[in-house]
Image (cartoon, rainbow, N blue to C red; front, side, top):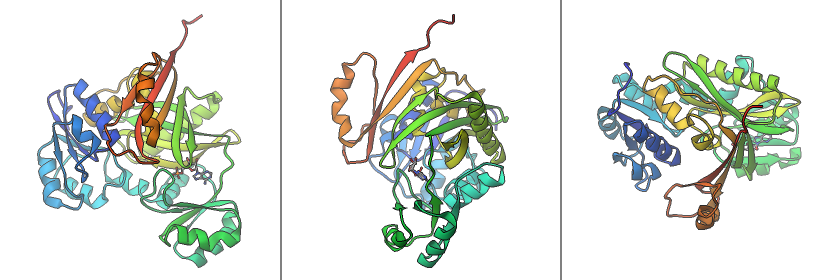
Length: 360
Ligand code: AMP
């Protein structure tokens, strides 16, 4: 595909806040966005040129969508692979492609893929029955975390197992779905590396970004992370290897645990990522712009940080602080336009950047 000139149309599968921030960034570069999302209130639709509100299984609607755009990307990793493959078979350019979705949608496939590339992760086993879980706990040990293989996010579809006799309760808690059981990793900290790969294979990275989760949901991110250079180099190298092996185009998030100074894989997300929201104000080029640059076949922008950056999510009722936050001169406030405030729902975020001092 030739580089897309301004005025072209980018199709985004998924219309959440990630799609909203992609569409805002696309507008800055002179592109228009069409959103495909089954939710009539999709946050991205408010800031996009058009919204096809249909189910991902609706082939006619998908084809109409694909025919109305110059390139398709996605902001939601649970877009059905069959839908993407159908569009690819019709000649639609989809970046990143179906392979990244296939790997990232299955927690077992994702860990198998990354360990085959030389990455490290904690002990894990695939389990599809209570008996298999009980047997796997002999290998994995306790404490452990049981997670559905598919469709889990923000700590949903997970159950902790502190002692082997809790296996049945955990299995019931995830409704007996195909699962992965992982040893609980005693990490020093959690980080993410957001790697962006262009259509010509150029790689640039943000991070590592240090992340804090509360109840399985990202609460706070900051960068640059206080990590030794060799750990940073290892984390970025692993992310680059994964992106290259997937022939990936766009931003890929690699979530890592730091254990004894080594990066261990937690999971990958084939999309722009919550931990990178601070790059809007905290980096020369944001993750959203760089994703679009890659998808449109343009040169990548600098990922250099401009200062110490902290991003806090506004989750559920946190969003009620919006007017106080607006009177804080240091706060960049982002609200996602979601009218329905629910516990655990990401409603917005706030970023503060402390510029680096002059070089001495
Ligand atoms: P996930 O959805 O798998 O990223 O899990 C959400 C959060 O739960 C992670 O960011 C960690 O804080 C925690 N977590 C998940 N799996 C593990 C694990 N195997 N060991 C320790 N903490 C975990």
